[in-house]
Image (cartoon, rainbow, N blue to C red):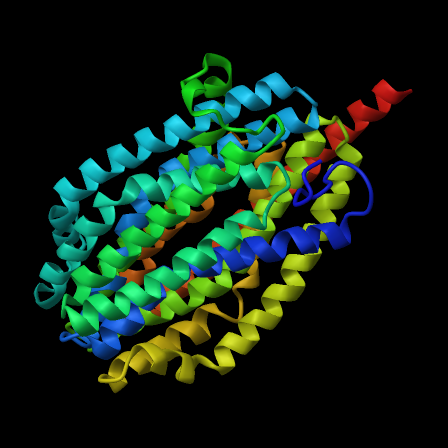
Length: 460
C-alpha cells in the first residue's frame, strides 16, 4: 500500500476516517478560498466595491449548474475505482483511471464552450441587476474559459481519494491557493483589472493544481498509475462510470437548478430590499466553508463504503454509516453555532461599503447556519448510497426532496405577501435538507439490512 493511502477495508475505522476526512475538508476550503479571495480582494481593493462582490457572487449558482453534472461523473469515477480496488481487480482499476482523465478533459471543454456562449443570456434570465451584469458576464466567461484544468484536477483528485490518498489533493491546493492570492493582488492592485483579474488568477491556480495531480498519478507505483500513452475510453469502465456518475451529476445539477431559481428570486428582491444580493453573496460564500465539512464527510463515507462494497463486507459498511452520521452531526452543530456567532466580523471581511448588505448577510447566516447539520446528514446518506452503487435513488430523492419542493415553495408559499421575503427563501433550504435526509436514510437502512442478510447467508 502507498504510504499516503488509508486502509479502508481492515482495521479500526473511527481514527482512520477522521484522518482521511480532515484533508478533504481542508482541500474543499482551499477550493472555496479561490472564490473567497476573489470576493475579498475585489471588494476591498477593486474599483467597483460591493457591486463587484454582488457580480462575482451571483455567478456561483450558474457556474455550479454548469460544472456539477461533470463533477457528479467524477464521483462515479471515484466509486468505480474504489470498487475495483476493494475487489483487488488491478486491471479494472487501471482501465478506470485511464478513462477518467479523458472524460474530465471532454467535460471541461464542453463546459467552456457552453459557458462562454451562454453566460450573459443566463445572467439575464436570472434577473441579474443591470448595474452588475457586465461585471458578472466578464467574470463568468474567463472562469469558463479555464474549466478544463478545473475538471482534470477534480477527476484526478477523485482517483487519489478512492485509492485512500486524501492528502495529496490538499497539498496541491495549498500551492495553487498561494499562487491565486498573489496573482489576485497583482492583477487588481497593480494592473487594475478588477473582476477580470481575479477570474484570471483563479484559472491559473486551477491549471497549476491540475498539472500537479496528473504528475502524482504518473508517479504512482500501483494500479492507479497513469500512463499518458494509454489514455482512452475503455468501454466497460466507461459504462460503469457513467452508470454511477450520470445520476450523481443529474442530482448535483438539480440542486443547482433550484439554487438558480432561488438566486433569481433574490435578485428580483433587490429593488425592495437594498443590499440583499451582495449580502446574500457574501454570506453564501462564508457558509460554503462550513458546507465543506459536509463534503468531507460525504467523500469519506462514499470511498470507505465503496472499497468495502467491492470487498463484499456490508457489516463494515453499516459501521461506516453510523460513524459518518455521528461525526457529521457533532461537527456541524459546533461549526454552525460558531459561524452564527461570528457572522458580523466575517461579513466585514467581504463588505466595507454597505451596512444594508451586511445586515442581510447576518440574517441569512442566522437562518441557515444553526440548522446546517441537516444538510450534512443528507450529504452523508448520499455518499453511502453512492458508495454502495445506488446512484439512481439519491437522484430521485433530490428531485422530490430538494428541487420539486423548492420550486413549489417559490411558486406557492413565497408568493404570499407575508412570506415574500429573503428569509422565506432561505428557510426553504432547511426544510428540503430534512425532507431529503428522511427519505434517503429510510431507504439506506432497508438496503443495508438486505445486503447484510445476504452476506450472512453466504457466510453460513
